[in-house]
Length: 293
Image 1 (cartoon, rainbow, N blue to C red):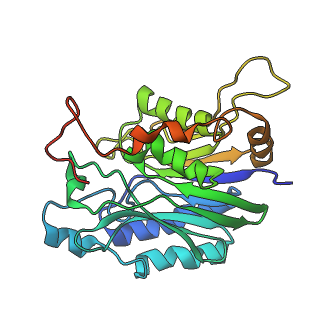
Image 2 (cartoon, rainbow, N blue to C red):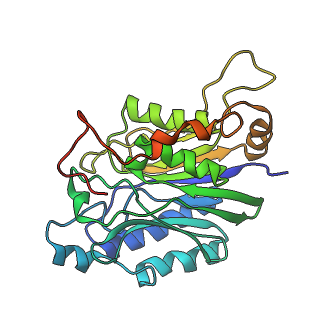
């Protein structure tokens, strides 16, 4: 029986350079392992501290290949620690860099690469290439295997992101983040967990990082327990504003049993009636000049 999946939410302030972020990140992963983590997860675009230069040449200079020393250092550490690591970085890509997460398993093997699909084209992310799809990987841990999906920050605001991951089999979704986590954004995450019966682990930057305020969260997606009357809060942990490592312990075996009996997820959907959802037509009041397909 899977006794619990422990995800370390690395709510860290970035340093002044990728080299310093590398060292700080490696140190944080070691501390996470000491606390019993099965997965250590970074906030969005850790390599640059979510800094996107205005010039293309500056972005290219900061962008990293998945085979770069920065990224492979976390693969090597994952193997050394026997712990999965989800590292985020500005990825070198043509024609523009991408906002990317690579998940390495406890053997140091890359099992998932995800680039943010819903780039914030109304802001600095208009200078990035958007990802094309959502992915789910089977992650081997010391306690057993778990199906892991990923989305990044603004992806959270589109129900389709988590829905597709659920349909692809995700049991837990990793969500690197870099924005103010206020009541409505937290409600989105709670809703994504509830409606898809999935666990969701979100890591934000702490207060001190521009436009961020901590409040990394984890929701287990289990709204009802046979032993308890009514519904329950699915929140496992909510960090404060300060820097730190916050542990989320997902009751995975209970979640799997819950998914077998409850009514959400893909149990009672009617996809043939949802054709409008895949229409690319956009009408007022939603037309935006900076929208990119």
